[in-house]
Length: 204
Length: 79
Image (cartoon, rainbow over all chains, first blue to last red; front, side, top):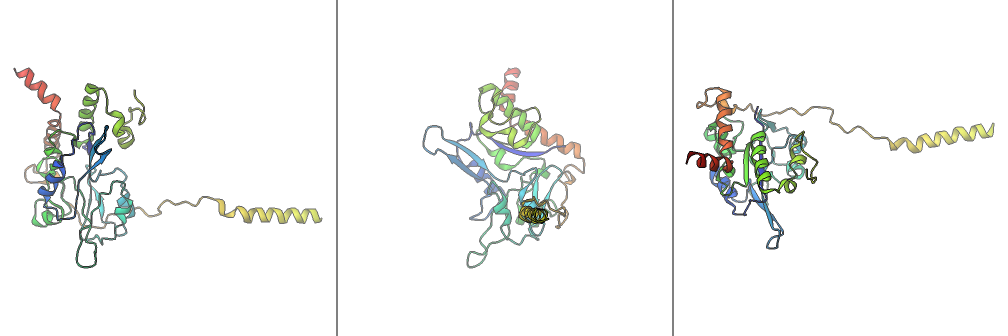
């Protein structure tokens, strides 16, 4: 069974923001909510690196663990989704998430938080597939159309890969072998715990 | 007799002093259960008609297309 994952190749990302733009456009995400964003380290200096960050659909998701109303669920493919009808906008998931994935639209006066919004891996949410309700609350359901997330498919340098963990792992492995570097940057073994992988930071 | 009493008091004090040093089990006692609405599965879409294998194959093919090494090699072979 497929286990959906993202990986961003820091050696390839050129910080074009195409992924963030594709996401915004595909799901008509409101102003102030960024399901995907670019993080750049050593900006403007030698050794500058960028990665595209969104919900990583964790295997043991901390957002699920802390939610007081249990609005999170995980699909059979390992995509972490949530029910907006249950969400109370408390923000616990935001504090728990190591990637800053949960976003809260400003709703009403005094900076009141709306219901949490985050990357859905373009898999919609708990509404009828392709219904208006699903699109309004969660965005387009590309996975049910047999497509990959818009961010990855739009990526011009193919830095951002999405899909079944086993498939994108083999793609990334091919790249690392061809260019002879890159495995240590992301820490694949640490993130995804491949059984035969060397420990993070250790070159084989 | 006094030494025995002092010994007992000492043991009592030690038990009291170390009583707070134990590790309390912090694991959640109750498993988290999703409380929201049921979602329809991706392959239940009209395009795939509930055929999970077909959906997985479509997605896998699309995932493999992200590998441009594969694409360029195929193009070179075609020439």
